[in-house]
Image (cartoon, rainbow, N blue to C red):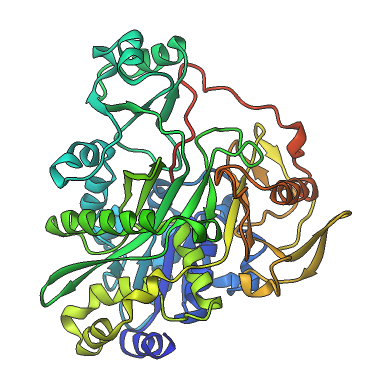
Length: 494
C-alpha cells in the first residue's frame, strides 16, 4: 500500500479529503499523507491524527454541531470558508487531488477564483443522484433477476391504508426515492401514520412494501475498468446497527456497523451478497459509474434482499480502511482502488497496480465495529468533557487509558475507542446530530438477534453520554414523529 501511495504523492502532488466527517480521513492519512481536510464536523480528536491548521471545517467556524449533509459543504463553499479553501489550493504549484465522500456540484462546474480546476475523484453528481433513487432500483430488480421485497411503486394518494394492510399486512414500509441514514423511510403501523404521509405527500412516487423483520447488511464495493470490461469487486460485509434507542431517538437512525457480527453469518448469505453486488455493479457500470459504492440489504429466512444503493463512500468505508490496516491483511484498501480507477487511463504504473491487486483479500473477515451516538434531546449544550482516545470499561464506568483517534490505540479487545468528532465542552448540539463514535475490536451486538446492542455495549454507550453531560441512556424519553409526518422505521440507512 505504501509503495503505491508514495507514487501518488510524488507524481500527482497535493492530496486532500472532503466529506461530512473529518475523521473519515484518519485511516486514509496513515497510508496516503494528506495536505488538507475539508469537512462539516470538527472534534477534539482532530489533533490526534491531523494538523489543525490544515482542516477547513464548517463546524469549526460556526461552533454548532448539526446533522450535517453534503449540501452544507456545497453551500459553505460559496462563502468565507470557500475563499480560504481556494486560497490554499492556489498556493500549490499543481492542481489539487480531491478524494471526495461524494462529488459537489460547485466544484464540478469549476470556479473563476481557482488557478487550476481540482482533480475530483468521484463520479459526477448526475450519476450519484441517478443511483441514489430507491424507486429506480426497486423497479429494476425483477429485470435483473434479483429478489425483491414484495410490494409496488405507487403514490400515497392512490392507495388506502386498509388496501395496503390487506396487500402487505402490518406493519408495512413507505420508502421515498431519496434519503439516507433512514430519512424518508417510514414504517406504518396505524392508519393515522399512513394518513399523515398521504396528506403530506399525496403525489410523490414511493415504494410501498412489506416490512422485513430481520437484520440488515451493508457492503462496500468498487467498479474497476479492465481490458475485458468493467469488473465489480466486493468487500467483507458488516451488520448494520439501526434505530437503537440507546443511541438515537429516531427509530430509523443509522447507528453503526459491526464487521465482527458478520463473521458467523452463513456462507450462503455471504455468497448471495457477492452475487447481488456483482449484478448491480454491472448494471451501474453500463451507465458509466466507476469507483467505490455501497449497498444495503435486509435478510429474511435465508434470502438476502437488496434495498438500497449508496453511490459514494459510506460511513462504513473508513472503518473498513482502519480494520484492514490493523489486521494481518494490509492490502485491502478500497480508497486506493477508487483513486486508481480514475487515473489508470493515463498511467501504466496504476494499470499494473490494478492488474496485480489481490482482490480476494477484500473478502477477508474483519473483527471490529463502530456505534454512533446521536443527541437524543432537543437543542443541547455539552456540559461535560470526554477526551478522545482509548478507554477501559469497568464497574466504576470508563477509565481513560491513552490518547488516540484510531483503533490502533486499543491494545486488546477490552479497550474501546471514543473518536470521530468528539465535541468540546459547551458545544451547541442540534437534535439527532451525531456526537461521536465508539469503536471496538469486537462485536457490539447481541449475537442472538444481530439487531440489539449487547449489555456491555449499552453500559459503554451510557457511560459516554454521562461523561459528556448529556442525557443518560436509561432516562431517554423516546421522541415521537415530527408533527405531520409519520414515525420513520428501523430498516437500514446511511
